[in-house]
Length: 161
Image (cartoon, rainbow, N blue to C red; front, side, top):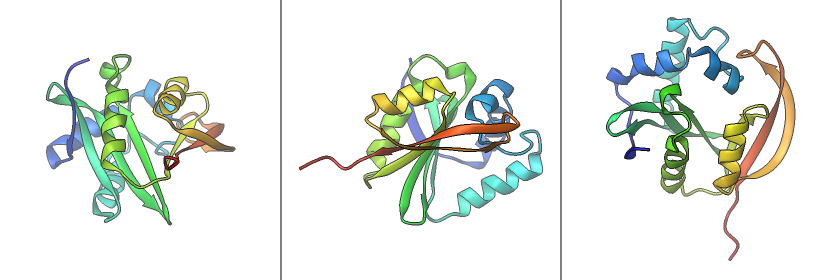
């Protein structure tokens, strides 16, 4: 693993994010994705909504200065959630672990929630290692796999005093 950082996303990153989020293996792992990962207009509209959201904090994950993924936090009602997507060329080297730790350090609100497809064993393990606790499971339609998928809701709870 190289040097991992989070930086603000800029317009020059949009193509890399789009290409990363079209990777078929990654789409299947994430499961709860865009209906059509190849639809650039839908992607651009989704990204514009997220970047305009005043509660969202969207970052590019870099490894040694190069693009390695995205990580973000946003509000859903009164809850604060986080999400991340790591480019396949950065899988298996601790990039996601480092990026998640950085994001958690920026996001001080607790509880902090995360959702993951139950079949995404790497993400499930990552969240558990980072101190997240499983809260619930539910099943919903996942466009990334074209069928119902179990989703796990995790929370990083406040530290006990």
